[in-house]
Length: 196
Image (cartoon, rainbow, N blue to C red):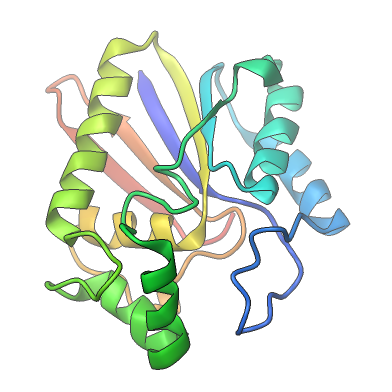
């Protein structure tokens, strides 16, 4: 069985609404939660990838250590953050959150058909990212793949991969995740867990 866990990083301190927060790292509780989360993962972790933002790297490294995966083999990808697969221009996208508010932009990410300035075309971005997941799973050995990302990437993908769009109340908590399974048919199946 080939499965991918697309995981939001663990707990971090609150980020001021006027700040992007790229330098914000995990809280001590976040580190403890990640360790407990890693202990609950069953199966061998055969690959790991993370956003290059430090709190995602920290989350990935804690999981790697617990699961016996070499931390030096964790790949860093801008598809998972800074800016992420759904953002074309980080500064322009950030302006949308600043001018329209987080709830408006986040709802847009979950269900709109036309992207706001700074964001990628939703259908194209999601389909391209899903193809990357499918190819990565098909070309990899059997086992579990763990990719650590941010709430925006996770929520956008989950909302558009599942049979119905998520609501804002379904927004992923810390360590919320999407389990993607490559079925024998070659199709991907999805299970969304808002919080562990």
